[in-house]
Image 1: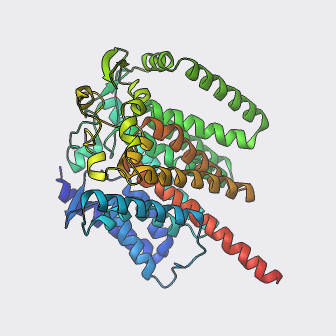
Image 2: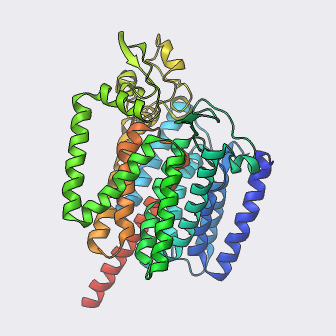
Length: 461
């Protein structure tokens, strides 16, 4: 069993060797895309710290591969800008301004913000320069999906986490006990810190499964795609988490509704019915779903803004806006900063006298609330704008090229991550990293579309 530092070193050597071989033999594009995906199969607790900057294997290998990409003679750095480029730059700027204002001047602040928001995006932007690159990335994405899903199934049924066996025990924190169970199964968390995060990683990568379906030219290829689909779905079930399963169902529903009129009507009717029931009686709907899926249904009374409120592990998602409403209203343009907002429990004002929050609602299970508290209204707006723009860009790409399924599936996945994902789960870096990488892929395709249009216009002139 390796320590965190030793695990980081071993993983970097292995991934570095794979990257170097691909870099020399296949070129910088495939090398970059492959190692970013492979890094998702390395535990996030395998990390080192350099000058106060935390480096996981994901950020380390991505940074090295991106720098090497820029130095390669076949690399193409200067490509048409996209709206997504501006959205990421805005989010980075707001985060830097917020942390400098609230935490004082620190040299590492811009680099931390870049590593969090821009680095995975840039890696996705570089590894997809044309639609041909999609075919090169699909096998790597599907291979990682097989590993993550298979190990999740093993963990849920046997209780053995292979990543802990190799890289040491996952650090315990207040998010989830390592041995957490539901419905009689261990909640698999794989190389992430929580089963929900692992499930969301699988949902984020699922569009590549649909791309594999599209590339399958014979029954053998379709059989492989079908088996992979089953394995990934079971892998998501092995996390025993409701939100990733809901996101997957909605993603598939969006893809089917886009492609079929009958599916569109069926999906719309089902969605309206479910939303109607929820809006009519949100507490009872939440309690019912929780009881039927193995969640706790024991209600407790806590005080929220001087009033009694019924609380459970599921209802906390309904209470989060009410609990943090005053703090959000007073967050201003730039919020309370990363350190105070992401602490567990949050170290932000306007929670005085709310002792229950320290023990029961110590985690902000809402990405938008967390971003607003962290970097203010500008941060919450830029975060929302990024995912909205990514979704619209993906759908427009598919409209231009209906024969390409990846943009449509990616748009559906990003939309469901944004709603309901971020409404039910904190935007943890474990799954935000691959989501930002996927947004970068969409941006790369959009940039290629702009280049093609300019080329055609030049020919016509």
